[in-house]
Length: 263
Image (tube, rainbow, N blue to C red; front, side, top):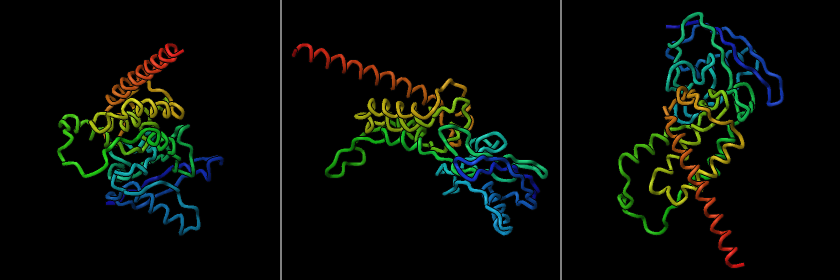
């Protein structure tokens, strides 16, 4: 079965260029296509007509990489809950629908071209603290480090985050607490993540605050997350961050006391 649609797509030639919506008629769309496959068809027609194709990000097209995020009719990844744009199928639309397609709207995600945004800020958060200590030498037994199932499940729930940025795009404040808390928590809850736990959370949160707004618990982030990451991780991150800062303050006080005693 096929449907016919009207697309209003944000077009912008570059980061400093003025952008605007362009309208395209898309007849005979197979309802089994994914949203990105539909855009591929639109681009083929544009190229055939000698026009510039619509630039958009994609990679795995399996809902894993997080590259394909766009805002569809005002909602990141579209109206279907817990799917990425590449998993959204055209059978969720009806003949005659007008679909508005925009890039992520966030100051921390500057537009590169059309629907492509720069998510380097996410990379900087991860780089600031995303590692664990691991013993070197001979390989340990598989069960040498015991991980309770509840802890393993919680770590996996946090690790489900694909870093797409939908949480930032949906947040009125442009906050990245859901993303950061997921990346912090999937390491901090595991035994292997304990040596750097406090330094990690302090570094990652401090880096996050350089680029993103503050969380005021609107909850839109959780609602649009394709991986169903819970905002409970934000509470966990906030607790760890406060403890990390308290521990750091106590260390500074002890260092000052030692310096005074030596003086």
